[in-house]
Image (cartoon, rainbow, N blue to C red):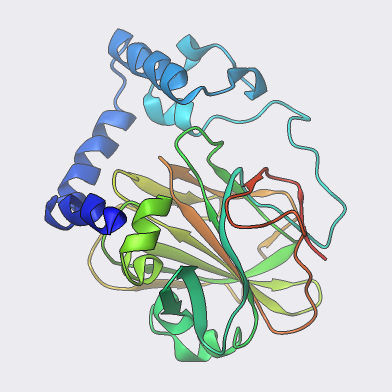
Length: 280
């Protein structure tokens, strides 16, 4: 009940207008005002700038440059596991896909088909498969990396709402991740099996970008957009950057049915880092 009451204002907020405004401010080069905002953010969220390739906050011309900062070499060593963690964040949920259904939170589920923009044939490829939902808080590193080597097949931008994706909202808003705006990236592994990375937008997430396309959103035309890369040779190695968020959000990973054992340390609420062993 507390969570439901806490999210009620989100239903009333002009979320897209607010997101557009914050996105413009974050991209602006405002000199001392930008540096003040970065200092406040670092202090408020206890951001460890010692891990950054550029630890001097005065070197960032905009808040976006700071937020999508690169890490110093060696800051995230890569495990030799079959699947590695693609982000710094918190495990929201993980486990088996029950036919077409994914657990969002206690008493809440949503369908893989809805998450994938209504693409039933694509969702069928993950029937009874596996999923992991990873939440990126404001303090986290916000570049997204490949959990395994994969060849890019297609990408979709699915329009939707822009609710917050924090744990409280996930517990209170039914079908949250299938309601919010999202970018769906579909890959083929070295074993020729599909896997998907779904980058979920949220309130004040001003932009989602991929390394092969650049900024995907905005624009927000209100209709599903799709790009087919099956005839192109775009392959990304395990651990290679594949995209980034401008302000925090969530990544959902989908894998097909078959043997897959998640790291036993990965439980809902566990803090994880990019490069750690995720599954074998």
